[in-house]
Image (cartoon, rainbow, N blue to C red; front, side, top):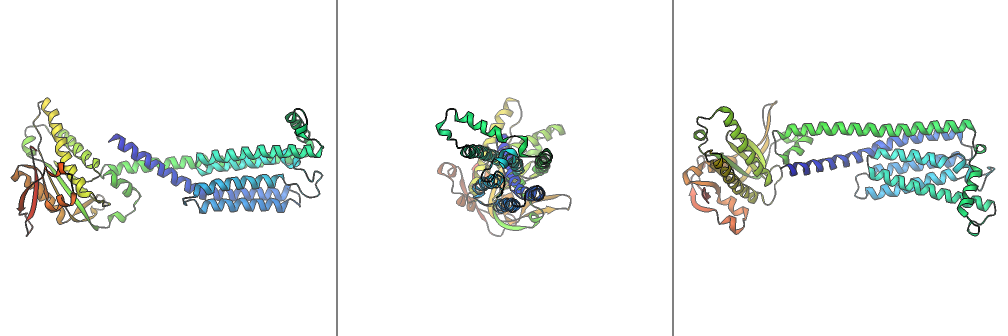
Length: 451
């Protein structure tokens, strides 16, 4: 059971993280619009008149790319599109930043914008910080790799441009890397940017980066809170519902309260002679016995994909085919009944070594239409199956006393189950049997209690 629970928790965590990644697309889109608006305003105030159109066009292209990622967030190609957009956006940032205004003293070169102002590094740092809003480590790593490649390529591009301006052939000289760094050193200096502009630019970009990282941390904390709350609600539901119902009920609002008719296989299991078995025992020992019995039976039900409908004193009701039907519902129900008999037999071996009396159970199984829905009061609802099929399954369980059987099932259920030869051979026909409340008898098969 613990492995099943862990697998279910891992699956739910993956689903929650995927949902957060998709929700992060909208959050990141809005955050980028705000950041691009702030950067556009800064460019209007700081950039030269000839650079404004290029800068604003770049901001518009980045906003459009962010919108594409958001609109395709649920597509099967979402990750591919996102990777392509990252490469495109980084390319836009690099090209727009390295483009020099016509008429600039360094027209034809990119060094003033690239290294004198450190613009590429700053813009890419902001872009990398924004990727944290995606809530995806894969996206952050991919963005970082693309940014690193862009920085390296821009550096090589700048060195080549500087060498051409100085009429140097880097491939023909000794120590080309040393000469390249020397050329870069000539343009990384105070002459390329005023102290006021340098300080203001650092403050603006640092503020934007801080805002992005703070927003990412806020989203992480909010997601953690929602996850803990959801797990708490799920644990509360798990006290009353089967695992295959909990996830559905946790996200459903009130639609599960609406009754719906569907085909299901109903199973009842009960302790034979429970009153006599508990005679003379202290109440606490009776409770301990019931808890152990219920745990054994619930494990069998969950092991075969059934839904635990309710505990009824010393009995248990389960359904197979709810909330969603499967083609092997009848087979799983009968295998569960056989598993219950074997589980109690193993339990009896342990009880025998402890000097405790043996436990005998009876199981009834029947298939047919049931009405599924939430029944009960406003403050205490119970998702349960009702109808003639439930009544027949309960009557079949009681018939076990008259036929010295451990399992009683209808011919209709056994026929629909299509069990393998070994399991089917354990069932013996006792012919048509009258069922209280039913006008027509039902053909019944049983498994003897010693079989």
